[in-house]
Image (tube, rainbow, N blue to C red; front, side, top):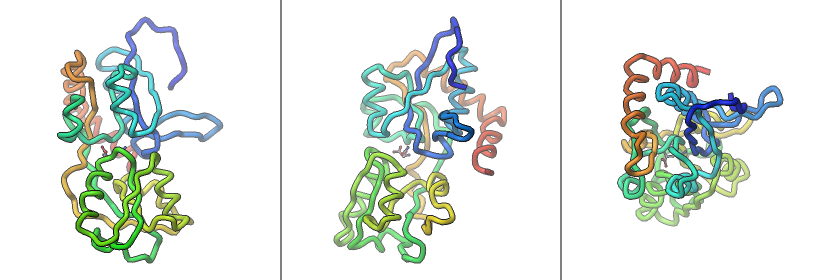
Length: 234
Ligand code: GLN
């Protein structure tokens, strides 16, 4: 839970963008508002292993790494992919998950591959690897317009209202938004092998080794499989 308890333990602050079910999202059931998800459970596990308390700060995805660099957070966990570009400014732990991209479009729109997006308005999350990948692909595709927006919910809304014809989102996350009544469909893009997830730390962080040890234990103990099942078999 996120209630404040008197504690003498050191505290680590995790920055995230809680628009990314089932990794991090607001659980507002029963009148509460709590950030939950697979990433949150993994962070809780790591914090316990290291022997520290955990505090979670929610912000736009695009603001995560700047907040880490400004020392407003100790680590970033947000389904974040370690890229060469990001490694210029932060360090990453070992990876703990692998996702794939999918096209989210109105049901029946037959947008099944990148080339089908010629002449279309396509939305992506600002600062994400999807933005980089899709903007790069668009250079080869006629009249494909790419617009980055802050929140995943906003991307989906643009497609529902028809202002955009497609959103490119990771498949496990898209599933949470492509619910009955939304009249949307998902068409998987070829796996570009660029969507592993890792935790970002400041370069030279004293926690790096402890984080990797905890991730190793998380995997080897079977706890990661258990948590993954918990969040994906819902
Ligand atoms: N994995 C993608 C990235 O690192 C998207 C993450 C996200 O939008 N939360 O950019």
